[in-house]
Length: 290
Image (cartoon, rainbow, N blue to C red; front, side, top):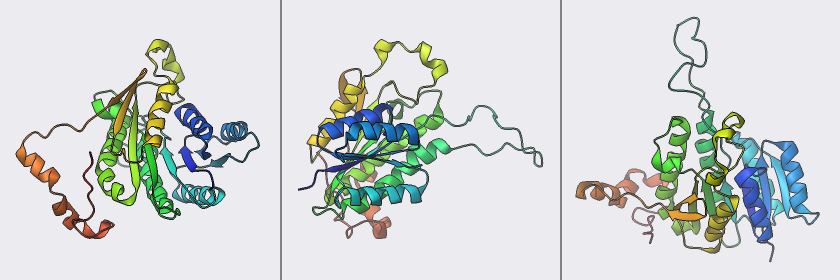
């Protein structure tokens, strides 16, 4: 049997690189997708050690064609299998809703549109990656696979001064919780990592002096959570906050009243509304999770 195969976006540094190394040590053949070609190639070569277990693809995840081709190449490289997709690539706020960073349009005197690249990378590209992973999971000899997404504890609390990033990360939690019950019926698990501050490239250099190193969550905690997801074939729809050495399961908020519960639990109502978009007939898509 061929070794299991994983894809890691943003895999040439930080959390992505730590998880890539963890996967390889666990026996996975792993493909790094990243825009940093020089670093990505160097890290892949070092991790590969001439054993054909790590490969690098220069991928801008916002470019669907690039990401799709890299998925296809990885699937074939791995012996026509894909077992894990780690959607980790991300950036911080790219514009401000508080002040104008670009000059006003000379013709209209109106503000220029916001640069929403943070959503292109942190949300849209993740959804496209999940779409591609599902496609290749279905083509495994035994259909199914595991998806893990890097969100953030800001996705839970959403009360910070970086609203675009917080909103993007909050959206990922909704994506995980809403898709997990349907993916469970397809042999696919989907879970999220919600780290408190980790030492990664996303943290700007000019602010690093304000961070107490004792407050940084180590990458070993990230890998511990990731290993938990790898080892469990039924754990899905979970969002786990990573704080120092702790793994804290963040549960869905309790329903405010019976009417809210009725709406949210009326699965056949929503399945009927979006019927053609779901894999099975109405009433056969939702799997009740523990």
